[in-house]
Length: 101
Image 1 (cartoon, rainbow, N blue to C red):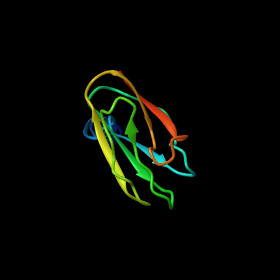
Image 2 (image 1 turned 45 degrees about the vertical axis):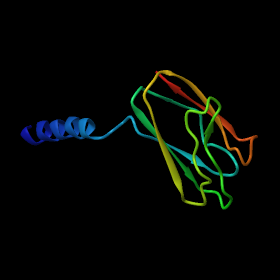
Image 3 (image 1 turned 30 degrees about the vertical axis):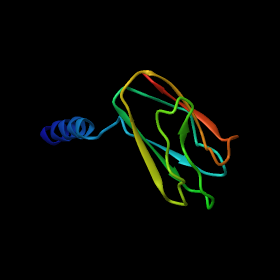
Image 4 (image 1 turned 180 degrees about the horizontal axis):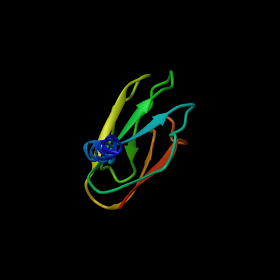
């Protein structure tokens, strides 16, 4: 019984130490993998898995990545609630959004 309790405590503590606010959005097949909802203070990282370069550019000018080659990534911390739409400026049909609560 003591080992089950210890395992439960370790499980709870491991959840506290992990930063659940960090989110990864993959870029693959000329598409952002998903729209994302995060809490204020979260960091979103985009990782390009395509063989072609892509960018991450917000519609309101808040963030703008350089061209990301294959396996490059770009991160941005969202401090204010809102809806942030973004595109790839190289391939403008690639669109997605981040909702910050």
